[in-house]
Image (cartoon, rainbow, N blue to C red; front, side, top):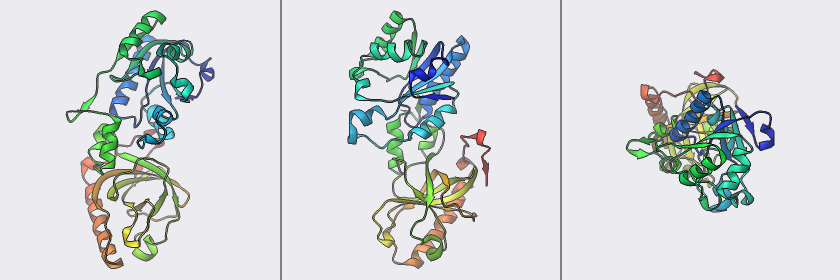
Length: 325
């Protein structure tokens, strides 16, 4: 997938295109269906398949500090989009100037003149342009005027409810990560660099942990989770604690992952943590021995949970040759 941040970068790349456009936070099952449909239509008509999205998320510009934590950062969003087949992703910088463009101004500048758009596919609730005026009906009229067709994808429902970024975000923040999997098509995941922590895990407790430098915005509710951990393209079982370690009186949020049956120095490495199931709340223990006993039980339970067939990780990057460790 070619990633461009300006129309100018695509002048010699895109002739005529089928475009889908959106924020795609989470790249969930609804988004995936939208992207895959655009790719299918493009292939059938000899067009270039293009995904148009934005960085930063428009809400971050329009509402500033009143935005929710986003499910995917830009790097991960692009990675996930690429897995569903589009030839090009145009990542536009969203600004107040762009927000002031009418639907027709935006469509003409970026999609018709810039991408040679011949077909546009949008989600059931998508709007673009100033004051979100560009709904399906307006875009259809613009298509008649400027020579492109518009199709709208019906909402995707799972468990009798529409799949949405808001629904996924609510589930993750509540710690109910297991029900988020079918909506995402994968376990909810975060990525981070392994950094030095307080040196308690291995030395004090006997359970070495990988402490993550936190860059993601959305984290599950504090507690202990059964997880899959990607280290150097190998997937391992693990158990993670999210929280402030109340037994030790910490104040800062941390994510500490104990990787089962693993040894090795991974300081400075980037690892990916996939949250499978919540085991328990974070709690304050009366002492080190009580905490150690509870961690041992958490590890046993985590191993049992991850050994169940339904908990098997769905590898989202087969091109990396990921294998189970």
